[in-house]
Length: 318
Image (cartoon, rainbow, N blue to C red; front, side, top):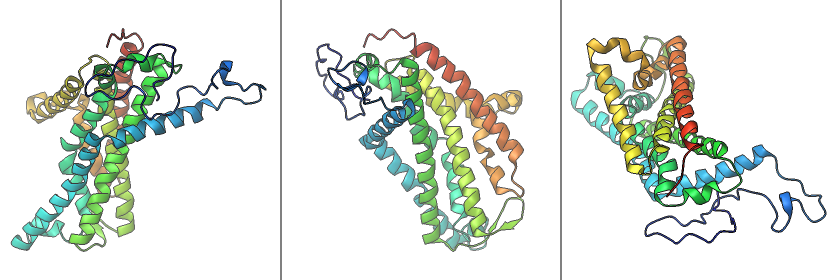
């Protein structure tokens, strides 16, 4: 989204701040000097709203994936599965018939192990940084008020920000899966996979289940993204939004580990992240995974409403 020309003087650049005129798609398709975007002959119609929002989302996603900090985090996500694979390979060489050696007997299982290890904190931290910076980062750098004067509307702008977070969540989870698959195929043999229920499925069926895990994990991270985005609308300090989101994750995991608080576990977001193991059973545990998706949708609805209520009435002073 460009910092569109609004007739006001351009803001004075702040040290370390992003330029006001970033490489974003135009927020308005109007032709200069022509009201409503029509040409002088009146024959040029505006693009559809869907196409316009798609162009804006593409531009926003491009900015997100070009940012060095985000690229560094994606690099970490790609490296961690490789490190897990190397550690498992070394352990299997040392222990022979141990459970680690049995897991190392099939490289496809490394993907499931990578998600089991990274979902509790590594993936949430990455998503929290991107979602927490979505609004608070603009406010901290003094560009939010100039972005809001563009003819897009605050609700549509917020939806665009969240859609960009969802795209990042899907890309991050897909990257983990691809990295784990590549490392698993290089370090270990591949073939039919024995599921947690004891049933053996073909390699192609295992790949399909990996796809289900990626989509489920991305849905869980998108729910966390809604929480972080809501916090991002409440502050002008990006680090505060990120810290609050990470603290929420850690506290939820601590509460889940306390037996006396078992009654609150179904209401905690982190409780349902591990339900992806339903894809490792035959038949798939669609009931538990479905409950997890409903919990994710509830978090998106509640915190999305909080973000909307705050952002549409926010008095931007930065």
